[in-house]
Structures are given as structure tokens and as C-alpha cells.
Length: 622
Image (cartoon, rainbow, N blue to C red; front, side, top):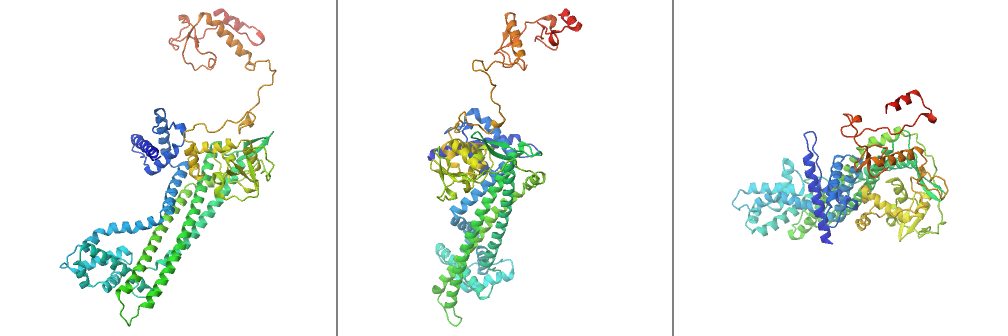
């Protein structure tokens, strides 16, 4: 399995390298195409789910490479289109949420790792100083290191530097610093790190006592207030998105209507006079953008609530630790460092945890701002939709509630047993509407029942959708998979990566409908001509067709045949070879150049065979 994944990664990398080469060749002074390699690696991997690009286990067939690369170049040039914006949003949010949910501790620990790596040269310069060096200069570097590592004050301000210097002197004066520098490197490194942790705890304790608080913000209060404000803002943004989703869904519902004729479920398209058919996919992608953004905002809201709960727990721990220190510390007695230092070190640990949470909040907020920005970019589509089509009315009404009347299928209707949303296929969206409309996301409703087919549960948006699914369940389930191959934004939104992976080598996965099942286009198709069974249905009702065919057959005896392509509509599809007259110099013209002009061999007189003088004169000249 690992070998297949490695081969797939190499194939994606090769395609990405070829894409960058093609874009570099097309660059000009007016515009330069810049791509995000990670995003297009993600996009290419989604495209390769489609076996119509002729993807094998270890190669991309040469016959499809050029077509595939041209398609990618076009997509790069259309990077601001709605379909590509949805994919970019999915990529960024998926990467962000995966990092937060799977390795939150790792993200937080990276803050100290990165900070220590940047401050490592300063730390080494302190620890490699000699006891005979200028100790005041070394102590100054210690204060700077402490300020930068803990974030407690800015050493460039005199008051804040003085506070940090005073705290550091309470633990390590110049004489103790000199003794520290005499130790072996590993020992003094460990000792120096402990001193920094103890000083951090002392600063927090002094802040709690109202002493030496310059440069030290109340991080717990700031963090909780910020989280409450962010939760209110995300809820507001979610409400706005929900309103937009509802309005766009209602508009598209008016455009598509299911109805039933003689047991067959069909779909009619009812377009507003100002709305073209080409705009429907755009509004479907707009709806997908809103739904994806709404789902992401809900995830962000949940993450912020979890962070707030953890911050409140850290706050309680810090208050308890400060109470213990106040019980131990007394200005009238000396306390052993071994007794009090562990309490200060634990305060330092809690402080770093709060700083980590602060960083995590900023990380999540950046993603929320990205979502809001992407949505605002397409506010023009939303405004145009309702300014121009506000009076748009549907021609059909919604179906009634379905019951357990369907018993003639492999499907079973679940009426009483509750089903969780996570157990519904396609995340609870109606697969019938997705198939008929090629991408319209309509949430199913429990009032129409939940259908169980092959151990999986499906929910639908109307009674007629249930009827259609019962007639051909395999057709509708596989049609959604086929649709996702060409509409990559649906892959992650509907959570069907595993299904696509299982079928990535099967080109034709949608079963053919039986002859008695009508498709969505059947409403505009006419039945065949009514005639007796002994009459050949291939006979033409046009007399001119047979006259033209007879003339050609009569000329075959003195004409030569050449296999040449032609654009003459009269000869297309009549014979496998094109008929040309022999060259006749008397009728050759310069414009024809080695081709024969049509020479009249027979003349059809006027209406009802009536002759006139003009026709007789023309015949005499032939």
C-alpha cells in the first residue's frame, strides 16, 4: 500500500512540475501566473480520482497527458472563479482543522521550539561568557533574554526593563551570575533555564499582589474577553451565512421542480426571463461556497469554545497555585528556595500554556478571516441574484409527506428508529436532486422518511425524490460519485473520498436506466412515428431524399470515386466515398482550380411541371 501511495505522490509531483513549466512558457509582461504548489498538489490529487484521465497505477497515459495539462493551465487562469475559490477554501480549512484537531499539543509546543531556536544565539552568548567578562553586560543580556522568551514586558522601555532586572536580581545577583558561569556548560544551561522559570513565576505572583506589574498584561482576562468576543462574531457571521444559504436555496428550488408522469419522476427547469441557463452552475457553486463557509464557521465556533473551556481551567489552576504561595510566603520569615521554587516553576508552566492558547486563538482567527474574506468577494453575485429575480415564483408546489407505502424494492423505509446525522450518506443531502440538477445541494428532511439501502441510510428533499430513488437506487448513488469526479468541490464536502478511491479505476460506474425509465430530458423528447410494424422505420418521408439518391446512383456508371472529405451538407452521411465528375475543361473555372463544377444532368421544371420561356432558353444552352 505504501508503494502505491509513493507512486501516486510521484505522479502528482511530475504533473505539478510540468504545470509550472507550461505556465513559465506562457508568462508575459502583462501577467504572471503564480501558483501555490501545495494547493495544486491537493487539486491534482482530486482530479486523479477520475479514471477518464486514463490514470493507471504507475503512469498517466501519453494520449491524455496533453489534454490533462491544457485543462490544468485553464484552471490556473480561472483561479478566481467560484469553483476554484471553493477548492482553495476547502484546502486551507482542511489543513488548518486537521492540524488543530489531530496535533493541538504539537502546535502549541512549536511556539516555544521556534522561540528558543531564534533566541538560541543570545542564550549561547550568555552561557559561554567567562567569569572575568563584564558581568553587567552579561546580566543585561540575561534580562533581554528573559523579556523576549516570556513576553513579560519590553526591555526597550526603561520601567519595564527595571522591573525585569529587579526580579532577576532577586534570584541571581552579579556574584551568583559569576558562580553560574564557572559551572560546566550543561549544568549552567539547566540552572539558567530554571532561573528563567522561577523569575516568570515571581512576576506573576508580584502582579497578583499588585507589585512590579509594569509591562505585564492580565493575559487571563484579555484571553477570556477576546474569546467571548470572537464567539459572538462567529455566531453573527454564521447567522448571515445561514440567511444567504436559505435565500439561494429557495431561489434554486424555484428553478428545479420534480413531477411525476405515468409513474416516472421527471424534472422541469423553470428559469426567470433574465436568467440564462449558463448562470445556474454559478449559483450552485455560490451555494456550495456558502455551505462550506458555514460548516467551517461552525467548526471554528466549536474550537473556540473548547479553547475557552481550557483557558478557564488554567485560570482556576493559577488562582489555586497563587493561594498556596500566599499561604507559604510571609514577609517576616525566610523561606527555602527548594520549597518555594517549584510553585513558581508551576506558575511559569501555566503561563506558557496560556501563551500557547493565545497563539492558537490567533491561528484560528486568521482562518475565520480568510473565510469571511472569500465570502465577501462574491457578494456581487448574491446582490444581483435578488435585485434581478426578486419577483421569481415557482410553478409547482412541494410534495406531501411520504409513508411506508413502498414495498417493491430492495430499499426499506425507516419510520421510527432515530438516525444520527453522521450515519446519513452524502452528509444528509438529497442524491436525487444532486443527480438531476448536476450539483444543487438540497438538505433532506426527515418528514419524508429515511431510506435504507445496502446498509446505508439516505434522506430526501421531497416525496417524489423518494419515489425516484426507489425505482433506481443504484443509479442515483453512483451518479453522485460520477458527478464528484468532475466537480471536485463536492468530494470533501460530501465526504466521499473513500468511495472515489474504491472506484478510481472504473470508468463506467453509473448503470444504464431501463427502457421504461425516463431521464430528466425526456419531457422534451417525442415518441417515434406511429406506423404499422411491417413498414420499415428507416424509410424517409421526404421525396427529395430519394430523388437525390437516385440521381447519384445513376451517375455512378460514368463517375470516378475518391475518398475525400467534404463539407457539402448535401453529401454528408449519404455515401462512404465522395463522388466527383470527371474534369470538363469547358466548365472549368479559375476559382474552382482542379475541382469540377456541378453540371446539370436533369432539370426539374417549375411548380407542378409548368414550363416557361426562361426555362426553355436555359435548357437550350446546356
